[in-house]
Length: 194
Image (cartoon, rainbow, N blue to C red; front, side, top):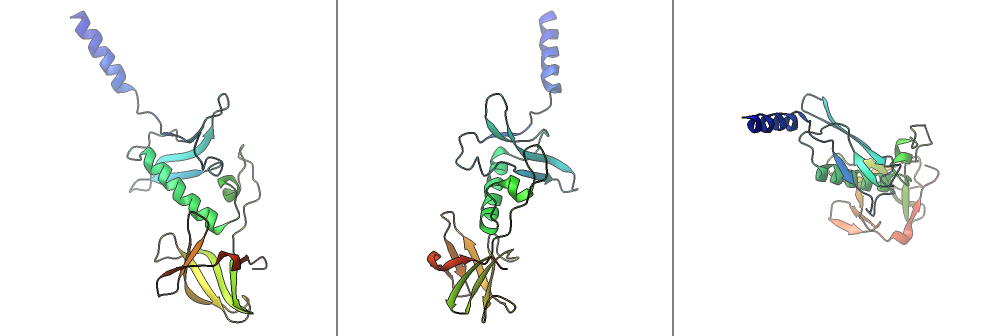
């Protein structure tokens, strides 16, 4: 009877311990340096926060994590990591940020730092006309951005021409309605005066 009581007490103690907080180890990950400053919030259908994920680096052993103090019920480590990589692709394509800290404008101790500037790119087809790759998401195509045609320099007149997407290798493809085609990256230049 005593053994049964001890077993039941041990089982009740284990059941009372809440689920462990979410922790994705990214120490050896190729994207670790870009993930510095990452943060994301997951909400349930009632808009209550169920998971608040942030980049965290252990001070004593240097390991890096995407970590949440919440239990993150229903949110898997795989989802958190995949969402971070998807967001990273967007940030790389549309800004000059070297990491999420620059993108969010927040340093490692929470101090405000200068936010990374949006990335506008142009390609001149025959001067002064060309195309402007705006860092503005396409509402109809996930992961694609707005492409504009300019007939006489990229200011003041621009007309919607299609969509563009940056691939993992840094190259760009465009779709103006006839299917996706690669862009000659040697002709793509920053539009600094935009």
